[in-house]
Image 1 (tube, one colour):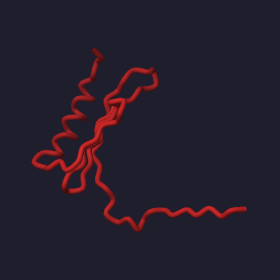
Image 2 (cartoon, rainbow, N blue to C red):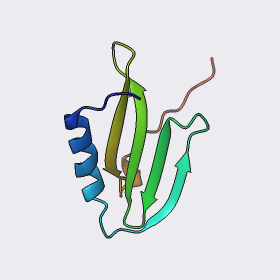
Image 3 (cartoon, rainbow, N blue to C red):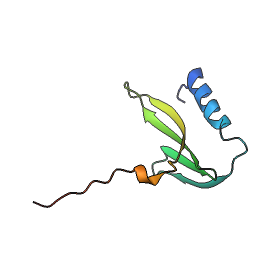
Length: 82
């Protein structure tokens, strides 16, 4: 069993508290089970992942993000053939 720091657990708890009373509309998990993504009805998305730190130890990462509302800010790059 891997050790999880108290700080990591607090970050997870804070991220999960942002999801209270929200509806999950879609969920997906990577084929290697290292990342879980939950999409919510109000545009929020939560990603739970296991990553390795600099010393190679597994680290739990939890992020709650919002999809950008304005897709016009996307950068379009065109390549010309030589």
